[in-house]
Length: 185
Image (cartoon, rainbow, N blue to C red):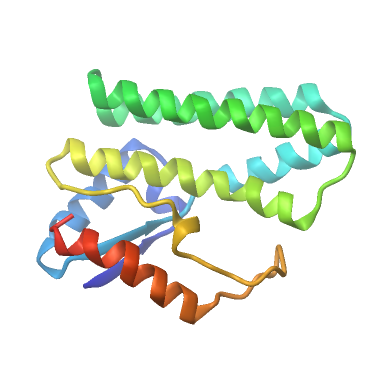
């Protein structure tokens, strides 16, 4: 088993994600576990959305959400074309952005951000990109499974500066990731 980590530039758009797909295709015999960052620039936009919403600028936050939603849906369409998988991913992406808009409204109401809420908000970018990448893999014939990183990456509660809990991560990886890899996905 190998771990392949791709940063935001490597998954910036549909073309970049297709290149990642080919890189992983060339490493299939090594049973890769693939980790991806948010689409290039998405995390900064998410943090800006949270700050704008908490600062009382909900309309600006919602406009940023709409733009980020459109970007993700555009890349999903470019990667997956039409069909059931494309429809499924588009619905999942839209649902995440609906939740994001609700969180922005809550931040505006509260008028401040906690470190924990900021971490949760920022993590949405990785969840979205990993869904896109897993779908792209499956679309291209690479059997894959989306795994919500929050089920494996376990940290302490020092939000925005959290440290990984290596023992808990090892246990979660053995319980969640290893069985998936053993099936060839």
